[in-house]
Length: 261
Image (cartoon, rainbow, N blue to C red):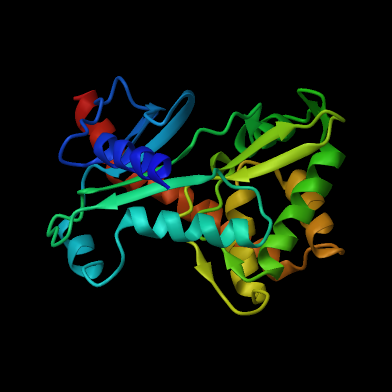
């Protein structure tokens, strides 16, 4: 109707890449490959939106991604795939992109701001120190609940591909139960049936990266219904090596080296 059309027009005007100005590093929630910041919803002043726009796109990515949907559309599609399967995710609001954009940066994804008590990264970092509770959530309960959530996701054919603990937001319900919402959904791939063991482990080594060895064993025993085998333990170690190598030799490490000089 006319009211909905007027709201959509206001939203489009507010989120147009040509008009919208990124707040810069100081005013952003994150400002690296992508800028992420909040904005009052122009259609509802009581609601906050989270906006995401690429900051830089290396030449090789522009070439490799030239036939792919924009980052904004991929985030929109990935989030809808989660919601179709009854999985928690920050509700999508809009994606806006410029046609014929050779730089692949003139696109914006907007979703509702989801309040959370903490992320899985914080939770697991606490458990890795030996704590059996974090903000009222017992480790055993958290491992069981997270495992159920991820089994459901993988069983429905969702391969998240960027399942770091920071992308899993956690909120405590009225009865003390933990509820999960996923963010940063642009890398999701969807399959017509449950995932293979290899794809499941590719997600699980990411989500368990902050845990100590004992914590990984507990999480994976809940997820698998049995203890890990030697190959699965090796996959965790290989991912640890990969993360360590990126920290030591990656772009950020090079930047730190030059700043130190």
